[in-house]
Image (tube, rainbow, N blue to C red; front, side):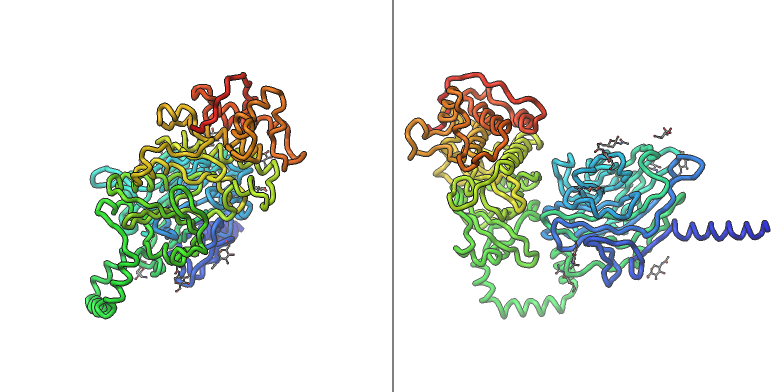
Length: 632
Ligand SMILES: *[C@@H]1O[C@H](CO)[C@@H](O)[C@H](O)[C@H]1NC(C)=O
Ligand SMILES: *[C@@H]1O[C@H](CO)[C@@H](O)[C@H](O)[C@H]1NC(C)=O
Ligand SMILES: *[C@@H]1O[C@H](CO)[C@@H](O)[C@H](O)[C@H]1NC(C)=O
Ligand SMILES: *[C@@H]1O[C@H](CO)[C@@H](O)[C@H](O)[C@H]1NC(C)=O
Ligand SMILES: *[C@@H]1O[C@H](CO)[C@@H](O)[C@H](O)[C@H]1NC(C)=O
Ligand SMILES: *[C@@H]1O[C@H](CO)[C@@H](O)[C@H](O)[C@H]1NC(C)=O
Ligand SMILES: *[C@@H]1O[C@H](CO)[C@@H](O)[C@H](O)[C@H]1NC(C)=O
Ligand SMILES: *[C@@H]1O[C@H](CO)[C@@H](O)[C@H](O)[C@H]1NC(C)=O
Ligand SMILES: *[C@@H]1O[C@H](CO)[C@@H](O)[C@H](O)[C@H]1NC(C)=O
């Protein structure tokens, strides 16, 4: 009898350990629970995301693991290690990432992609009933998740707002210095995640493949996981992509409960796809292949004439200092092909600063808008490019993402995310386009306010937009308002000599103090934002010279009506009765308040967003002498 029990216990024990500890050097034939974009390639790579944008994928070990002893609430120690590689669409900015995740359910299909990383969505983000623990490897920075860095590793508890995070990297055993690792580099890296159930220490360590595990962990925190982790949890990965796609690959993975995860056999991991490895690497291998090089040289000579013609056509300017920005640079040839040679058919518009073309990048098929800005002076080019690259790091869902640049003789090309619904002014002022209903207008206003607030105080340096108006607000595929052309006004006047003495901006949006000081500030942006609010509520332009004199300048006209108590007369007639009175009232009054002639009387963008979100009651308006029209 007792022998039988012992035998059963042994079987049970064996059964448990066989499923609680596992090691996969590649995933060929491995059964995981996959959903969304996730799949296992024929080579045995676990691919979490593919070329589909705004998509996610999950891969879980099929059965739940026991994380707690039945007699105590203590979370058991666990340890895992895996190797991953991320290939971006362009070797530049990413806006997605992946996580190693513990979840009570392996069905996370209700979670969202983009910055939600496939673990939560907008409604349950931060909710303690999620019981989700994740270690995120995030390539982008976004305000929504309060990321401090792009390219970071973080520990997330029930939320994509990390409780702990650090820029991706490792601490060298040799000199104790931190070294950065670029998650997007396409280079495989190994991760170790360890939790000690006794002293509750949670460690995350990262290193390039083949490097031994660094002695000091990148993240090491004491976390009491007992209320977060349930008795049984699923372990696995989530991957998520945004506007730009990324390939997230896991090459191998091992896990152990109450012990050290077994080491992976690095030499038997599946190979990464060759066509994805960076061109730099390819170049290095070519040098080794001498015969091939000779063949190529011959080929080059044969095609010399052709190449010279092409070279001239696609010639670019490159300086040594630009190497550090290489990742943000697009080859001119690629942009040329994307826009079919900058054909008029692809022209989206002509702005003060240059022509904008629509394009589809060859290969990735990403839709972009390419702006050609003439830029003659050699002086300040370096600062210009540095500034473009830093503007490219600004991430906010209400800003049009700057993806990169290209430099040629006499001109700069700026590459932006493409906004399928065009600019807001077309909807507001065109008779032919259908009118926008109030709820959409109010949402766009709130979005633009939040984007501008981010420019003013969401970043380590203040970015003044300088040219806020309806025609610089673009609408994405979901009709979200996104500020375009931010931060560049200053750059434009650096480049084009003729413009240096002008104050950049548009009549009707220029704060009166600019005439005296010529110094743009956050409150001159707020002034323009006020004029923008009135444009949206009244459905007309800030200045309309064809109107009778008292109505020509929108701010003055609304102000006069407010004094007479007839402010609602100024609302867009196309709205009819479809509006929310309190919201319309707020927008009109806020528009006037922002247009106050004295900069110090204008609210900050932070206050404005709080008014608009209803966090604080609407502002009290005091009458003031109105001569706010900035048309000087
Ligand atoms: C990529 O993932 C999506 C789901 O997100 C799926 O519908 C699609 O078939 C996948 N494409 C490829 C090429 O595997
Ligand atoms: C968010 O996720 C939760 C839990 O999976 C789900 O119940 C909810 O419907 C989701 N919300 C949205 C807006 O998708
Ligand atoms: C958290 O989620 C639970 C269950 O889905 C829900 O009942 C609760 O209202 C949510 N709490 C908050 C603050 O959203
Ligand atoms: C982690 O962050 C969430 C949300 O920010 C917070 O509710 C929670 O208390 C934090 N947990 C720990 C262990 O710090
Ligand atoms: C966990 O921490 C305790 C106390 O510091 C220590 O004795 C034990 O060896 C640690 N366990 C592991 C697996 O590191
Ligand atoms: C976690 O990291 C710290 C500091 O790097 C180290 O002292 C500790 O032993 C590590 N704990 C585990 C469980 O690996
Ligand atoms: C950890 O948290 C649980 C529940 O929140 C609590 O009962 C336990 O005492 C905590 N452990 C320690 C060591 O603080
Ligand atoms: C690791 O994999 C290689 C190649 O598959 C194999 O030759 C070697 O024996 C393996 N090493 C161990 C320790 O399993
Ligand atoms: C790489 O090659 C594979 C197979 O040869 C193909 O399926 C895949 O689409 C290629 N990827 C890219 C980005 O060209």
